[in-house]
Amino acid sequence: MTQLIFYLTLFLSYIAFSSAYNYSSYAPPSVVLNDRYFVEVEQEIRVGFRLYDASSVKKDSKVIKYQNLQYTTNTPDVKFPRVVGNNNKLYFFGVNGNDDVFETTIMFSFDINEKVWNELKDVNMPSHLDPNQEENFVGPDSNGNAYLFYNDYNVMVSFNTETLEWNEYTIQSFVPTGYSYYTWYTATILPDGTIAYIGGQFTSGTAGSIDAPMNQVYIYDTNTHVWAAKSTIGNPPGPRNSHSASLTSDGRIIVYGGVDANNNPANPSLAVLDINKFEWSTPNVNNPIGSIYLAPSVIINDLMFLYVGINVTTPVYNAFNKVYMLDTSTYTWSSLDPVATNTDDNIYNSGNNQLTGGNDGTANRNDLTMTLIIILIVIGSILVVAILGVTFYKLYQSRRPRQISPKIIDNPQQSAQSKV
Image (cartoon, rainbow, N blue to C red; front, side, top):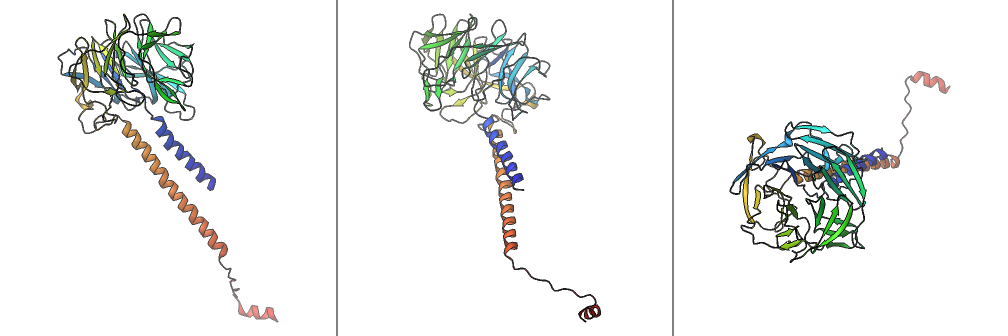
């Protein structure tokens, strides 16, 4: 009985606290399809993802249409998904949500036209996905390759969105002595096939975190698989992590938002790196929207879109009820009202809205965790009371004086004869 209680308590504790652990912070990805759509993917694809159509959006537009794809049937449970898109398909690579013991990796594709999921079972996917690192896919490049950087293993992995082939490359670490990880940076694939890593921070469990310098950019060559530190010119912006970076058609990386290692807002909020000269500049911004971090950005037709993030002044995870748009030619911000193509799929300003009130689904998961913890406490309390009750009862029985019951005589005459 005691062993049963112990294992039951242990099992419930594992469920409760593993739930709290599994839903840790995770940077949303930036996904563009066919230079027309961008996709908002939340921390868990079973919570939902939205497909925004930017093809008809102009500089003076007031609305943007979207489809809510979270109601598709048979949505797989993929935790910590790394997401990339090509043509009409999204590719989700992450931890199998149905395997809490070994946390095996799993991969699915999703066709945005057919709205059909397909598990990719025959691809030789990596097995070392670390949920605590926030890397997402970069790309795809002109050859269909998307890249994932795992600096804790000193490897770069690539996935070809056309052939579905994975490759892995050992790389040289450039993390400063005394630090373990390079995190919360942005990675932007350039026309020559190199990847520019901007900002971020170097982190160690004991030494804390320091800002990566902004007067240099880390360049990864996808052909030679070699790192190089590229010095910049001009006046570099303040250090930052959890920012966004997107490349315009004329070779400007627009860096927006973020915070430094001390969680101070990045200054200035918007900076531009010209990759033709690797020169920083700080343009004047019209209609600024404030300082935001953990906000992925995408550029379609030289319009930059922000669709989720955290306001630095009110640090509560708050998905926007607007989509913010930047005209990259004049650096002018405006806002768009999201309009569902199917009104039944509206997730903004609705009774069952997961996005208003500072909630992108994280609160729902936190509620689940708290519910499991409360259940654990209640069951644990009942078990403790039961154990104490049984213990006191046995103690009472052991100390109670024994009484000898009188022998019952059924036949008095037979009893008298036995005495003679």
